[in-house]
Length: 295
Length: 173
Image (tube, rainbow over all chains, first blue to last red; front, top):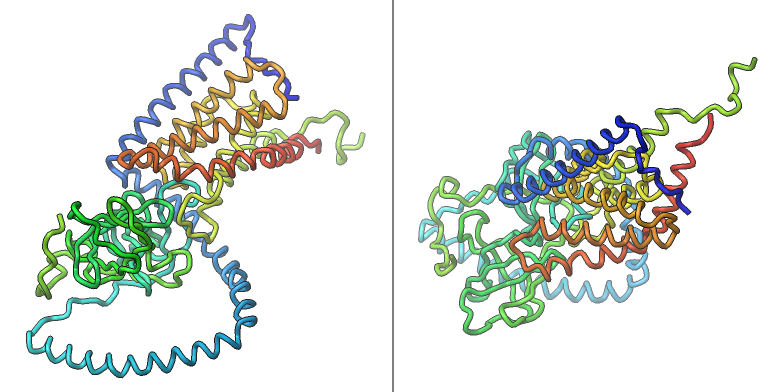
């Protein structure tokens, strides 16, 4: 049993006033706070300095916990690898032989591609990454999907730069502090990425569902062209994400589009690279006309 | 006179009495951003909010009713929600606890659990709606339902933990 509160201030004027003032402060503050929240939805990087300060505070601890648990979390993988070693070995050898054959075929295609490109005198855009880092931690208690990247302004990171892992797109930089920066993940509800189907260039828009999956909507509502297994890559439309970064694979069809799973899992990705935003000043010579039709 | 040892009836350290509750809430708010966990959905319960509610349920008179303003600001800095969300919602929650503690005169364990469950659900749901005002609200609420269920089940544990911290807080020297 909890002792009942003595909230009645009695006859003392001073006690009555101080209780009253406490309630006035609380109600005013609560209303002001909610108004502030609604305002900062309009301006999502408001109070950037405060946020950056808090992240600079959290990042060193996150670096330590990451290095401690990084070695622990691999244990289950290692154990299961021992158990399955025999069958895995056989399967991998088969796959290796297959892949070698494909590689030979691809290398000739690559050479042909290079010659054709030289013929067309296309300049490769600068695909080199600005900087490399790793994802430290993320907001795991709120419905906002923001991760902390281990590098910041000192390494040239700035807001609006795309971030990718080896397997595909991770997200974009929301704001950058001196040594740590915020990345809005692909799966955030607010993150909309213009994509196209790798097979035929069908333009579509992907937006996060907030639970690790993506909603893909085509711009043509009339029919639903998606099939499970379709690969989606960035289209470069809109000028933020460079084209041809793998984004997601379609898992199932829905009545107004498709449900897709990101190809790069931010929880498992080791290193990520920060790219230059795909803006006109960064594209010296437009390499190829962007697929038309996207908004 | 034995000056070095503890004296009979000596109260607990004033600093410890004040700092322990604040420190638990502040650390619990900042902890999720310090764990090496890149989550794809809200998986962790709101630790700071749970400690905040449990302290108020255990010691309603310990803090003034506006304590949600500074503590909420701290939580907003680490939770990723727009600044002001927790400031407003936590303060409303603490006003609700003060009101209920006058209505329900002798609160028991199940009262506390029910109040904390209700407030966690309301705060998390409203925070999600504030974070994503343009998304369909049904979908946004669906995102936080698993987190709310986990949090509600964890409330007794947090009440116990708060009790342990309270014993430490009031321990005689």
